[in-house]
Length: 295
Ligand code: GDP
Ligand code: MG
Ligand code: K
Image 1 (tube, rainbow, N blue to C red):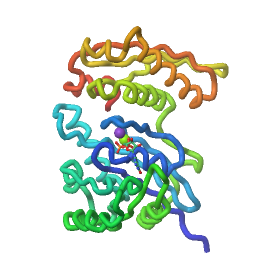
Image 2 (image 1 turned 45 degrees about the vertical axis):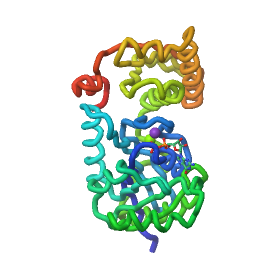
Image 3 (image 1 turned 60 degrees about the vertical axis):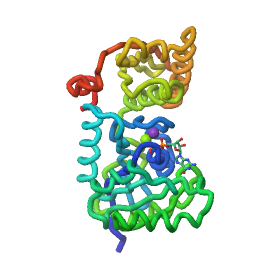
Image 4 (image 1 turned 135 degrees about the vertical axis):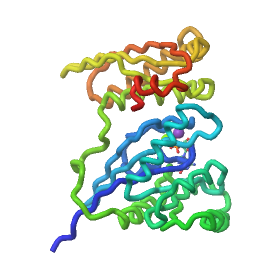
């Protein structure tokens, strides 16, 4: 008799910049959700799917917690996180080796049943003294009793098999929800917008406040190529020159790099036009957020 298949949702949670996106990408083995140095670059739930033998893991890359800024954006993201954790089968709480802060502690009250919750201590490659790990994990375990603890390095691919094995142990028996080769349930248009947003954050993320989003306004695709028009929505007139850079150099680079990635994604020539629009105080108004596609 063959063993039944297993399939379940896996949420990856943790404060910004602990390496959640990097970890999901490393586990799936493909670049699905975006990665950047800047906090808050994953605003959407992204399902990355990994199918191996009888097991199918459907990853949900939750948005990071934003603690310093209030507002509608923050409340909405925390609601998304809470709802996500209630729905999933396994929760992977990602923390950074040797660096436990109030941002990490804020995650604890939201964690569900300890039995389905795994602590992944990421960035072990950056830890100078490996012995520090015991004290670090001990301190965390005194606050929440995780079902398992796995030290990993998402960047270097260390211990990822062990993490997958712990997750697999917690997957419920059931039919697979996705085709074996499915990578994400996000439409290609969404991924294209994420590509552009990643380029913006990488180039001007340090100067540009969080209130910036990308809307795909035109998408004409044929066998021969794609014509895409994207609009970058910023909160203030003053954000425009930051995005543009001297003589439009930033914008040019952002558009060029995004176009190259989109070309790889679609595997055909891409003509990309990028515009900037100012929409005052948009992150404070949930109605505006919904209009822009944040449900
Ligand atoms: P997220 O905000 O939790 O999704 O974090 P990201 O995946 O965007 O990663 C934040 C930063 O940490 C990026 O600069 C990553 O390259 C870096 N990072 C992620 N995983 C590791 C790791 O295992 N080791 C090291 N040294 N850096 C990592
Ligand atoms: Mg992320
Ligand atoms: K990030």
